Image (cartoon, rainbow, N blue to C red):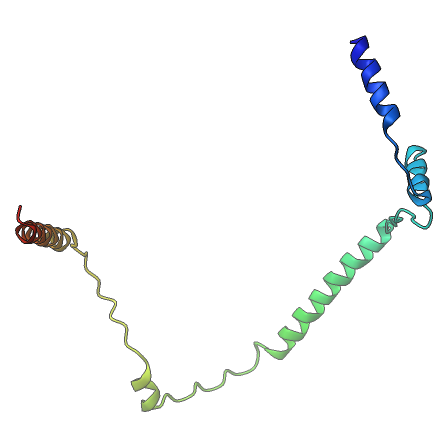
Length: 134
C-alpha cells in the first residue's frame, strides 16, 4: 500500500493545472461556504395569518353576493310564465328514441361466423396444397 501511495503522490506532483482567477474565487467561496459575489439567495417572505383570514372572508363574501344576485333575479312569488307553444316543425325534427330493449343473444351468430371462417381457411389451405402439388 505504501508503494501505491508513493506512486499516486508522484503522479499528482506531475499534474500541471492552471486555474483562472474567477474559478479560483468561486472554489474559495465554495470551500468557505460563501456564495460568489453578486448572487444572493432569494428571501422567502411569509404572509401573516391575518392575510389568510382576510382572503378567506373575501371569498366567502363574494360567493354570498353572487348567490344573492342570482336569487334576486329569479323570484318565487312571481306568477309563472305561460309555456311556449310547441310548433309541429319542432316535434317532427325531434328524434324518437325506442326504449324497448331485449337481451342480445350473440353467441350463436358468432359461433356460426367462426365456423364459417375456419371452413374458409381449410378450403384455402387445400387450394394452396393443390397449387404447389402436395
